[in-house]
Image (cartoon, rainbow, N blue to C red):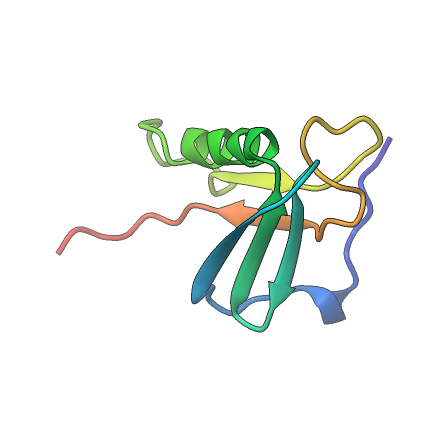
Length: 98
């Protein structure tokens, strides 16, 4: 199964200014409102998303052809995302030392 390529007009390239975490029931639903990502879901579902992001930010060295990232996209049977969730790629960028 191939993942769908998002249409160019919905791809966000701006910086995220805020992440709003809202308690809820059931799987995580990710939404984007301007420069804010809204994360709504149960404690358990949000913990699974947080573990994915923490793993991305771990101690693995930078390098390689593709930047370190995670793809967060619903598929049937997904472990913590809602079918209504926005699709996004979270990329970890190296910041040069001062």
